Length: 196
Image (cartoon, rainbow, N blue to C red; front, top):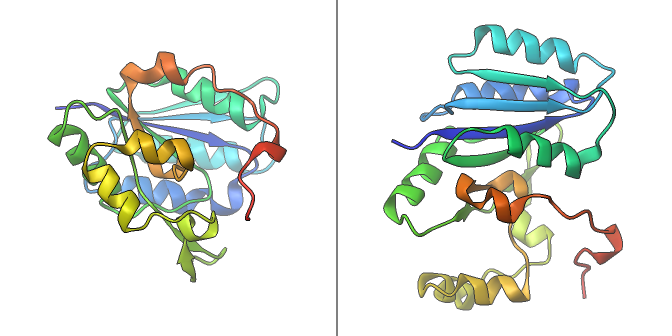
């Protein structure tokens, strides 16, 4: 059986963090560990994390940075501290559907050559009300029949060369890819995809 790690980064996330932690605890396939790197939060984030660790049914490893690393370096740190075979990235303000980890694990088990599993995600407001569109629509990504056919034919790389539809919060990868993933490059926001 694969060991599943969840890498979460937090920063002043008290407003939404409890809901995300509850969704991790409600997974039909719980993680084997949750690794959290907090980036110098000044709100109640630390207390929420410590309380969750005390009652979680799985190991929760908390790391509190002494200086602010910012999001990219903080995620790199969290990834580097994960000990599982599969690493799922986790944002502090999301809520996972109960079967997320079990579905990801099933895909990795089905095809050992797969290095990355990702999905679309539903965009919601601060009260978890659906906004009527999914992330791929909001990122101006067309993952239509052509792209789906190429993926099914094993040509995912061809699609990913033309557009990025992988969001960190909706992906997991094999830990054997850590050397390829780390260090995560810090890019200028001006280089991100813009609508045409």
